[in-house]
Length: 421
Image 1: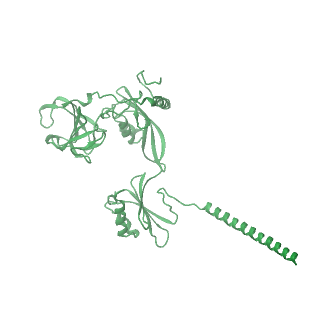
Image 2: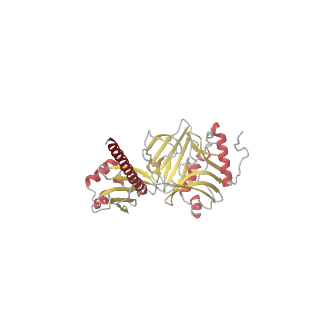
Image 3: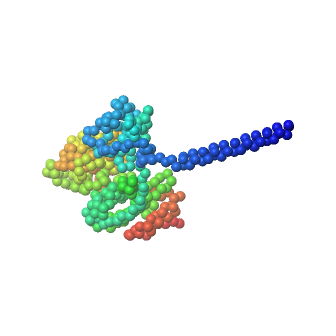
């Protein structure tokens, strides 16, 4: 009897073991199937980082005088939600100032309710802002992925830098970049036929569309027979442009207060005044430019005057230090925040070209004082810039030489070019 019971117990144990093993195999197979299913699941994420599966997309361009409510009410976004969007967005972007011509997107659920889920406003081809219209509004400012392509360009000036670039189907943005890099070395109002340039630079693309000019890597600009060089270099805590000898291109003062224009009247002790019709000193430089052209501070300093001054019209005067002061006349209006006591940095917009005061047409009358004496700004020799830091000297030389070889600069250079010891 005991042997029979023992055999029954053994049989039950074996049977139970087989059942457990079978269950484990089945569970494992189910888990494997689940993993395989998970692995094959994919989501569609668009350029704004939105999962667009089960969503409808609507896009359009903002019309003149169209408001946010005009756009969203047809998508059943109520006034309370629109008001909340504006309030939540105030520290990020003022939704009341959406601009005509800008693109927008609305995403709704792909079902019978078509519940609005997202609103996207594009500032430009790169930058955008996303409003998640779920229970609580979430805001995310972003940028599309930018691809960088290195480019080389060269040309001989026939009329202006802008026109020379246009003739080669190059972006006019490149002209602005070149003028910014060499703003302390060349007055771009004085470039002439026969000047030439060679430049290595980056172009930016989004979805294969050109969206802008990136950094200038290296440049040679021959102006009036003299070569000017600029090399982009990162020396730890400072990224800047340096010449072939390792001196920073950034100096205390810009070559001119406007990026592009021409000199219509030079500094003179005796000039026939165009309105008064009598000879009198003209102790400044007149730059002819279109009304509204931005005027830059030539150097860091404190605004000591920003007011209407009779014949000078709207006038800004900046004290740079104990030695140098600059003045800007006939402005159409002042730059943002420009008032007496304001501190400005070199390149800040302090106003816009106009024809206020005693003036025959839009231009900037630019004045410059050295120790309270008016002087000809174009003839001043400012102190030299700081050289590359000694600990980065060899690294800079290696990078400079590599760039020279890559773009084969036609150098009309001094022999005492910086070399490593």
